[in-house]
Image (cartoon, rainbow, N blue to C red):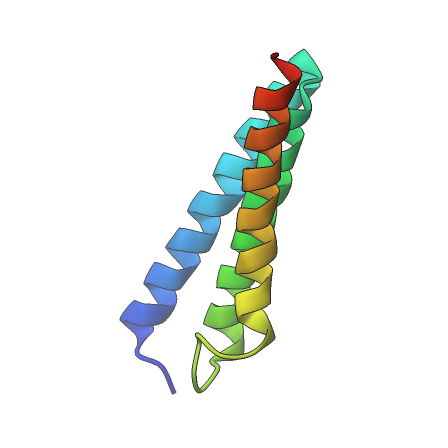
Length: 89
């Protein structure tokens, strides 16, 4: 059983990721720039991963498939930045 403080903070972090994702989705709807869509997807994945950590109460957070969710999210961010910089040339 995890302490209530840890669960509360994990929920707050997940909510922060979700809000950031919604902001990027709003910017994408306004500009139709793929960078914002990738960032929205990445922050959505980070929110999902943090919610799974909080609700699933894993024995070791850094092992297993939950780490892959974060890896895919950061991969999306890197791909979006590289694609945006290559399109500018």
